[in-house]
Length: 221
Ligand SMILES: Nc1ncnc2c1ncn2[C@@H]1O[C@H](COP(=O)(O)OP(=O)(O)O)[C@@H](O)[C@H]1O
Ligand SMILES: [Mg+2]
Image 1 (cartoon, rainbow, N blue to C red):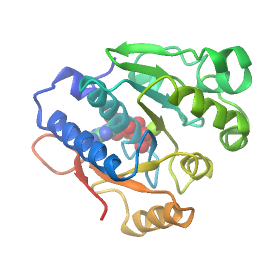
Image 2 (image 1 turned 180 degrees about the vertical axis):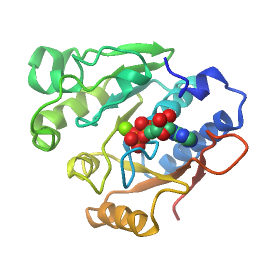
Image 3 (image 1 turned 90 degrees about the vertical axis):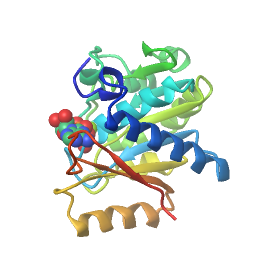
Image 4 (image 1 turned 60 degrees about the vertical axis):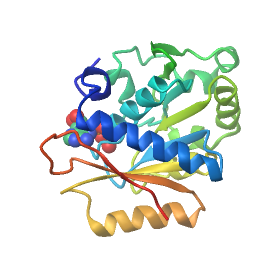
């Protein structure tokens, strides 16, 4: 487990409180139109997607919601590092092996929280993500938990995220204060809207506050 899990290591911090606010907003956003499965994305690498999603997943689990966190960034997976898990069997195992599709290699990391790591990285991530097997995997995972959260690559860099998001109930868009360029933020939003993906929220990481892990949240009107 790494220092990035501030909701675990310091649940009374301002950052942990911000993650609880993020959770509440997502739960409320789901009242109008159900949100059972969503992905995180951002315009670029290193914006804080994986860290944000790991903390959000933990916060949802802490509130009693049975949650599965899936590493669907099949280019630069990070969840196995964050949770200190083996990455050799995971999502891609599920997509390639019928037995794993029925019985996915989930790791319980906390009460109400299971993690499916990336599995061995394939040469063709976009094909795997867009295939029929991915739809089967999504249904299988949704049948096992209340919420299924997907870590994903940057939306402007590769097509994987758009392909994945179009199968889900929405995305959480992460922006990094002081780094994400305005035009990239705009392009990321447009790329998702073009394919009718619902943006369920925007999380700002690296906000210039006294606590360097603060994350703020805004609901999209
Ligand atoms: N809210 C935050 N504030 C400050 N640093 C952060 C925050 N979230 C992540 N980081 C740091 O930024 C780096 C990239 O984070 P990561 O979550 O892996 O980004 P991504 O998944 O977008 O590539 C990591 O070193 C992580 O510790
Ligand atoms: Mg990442």
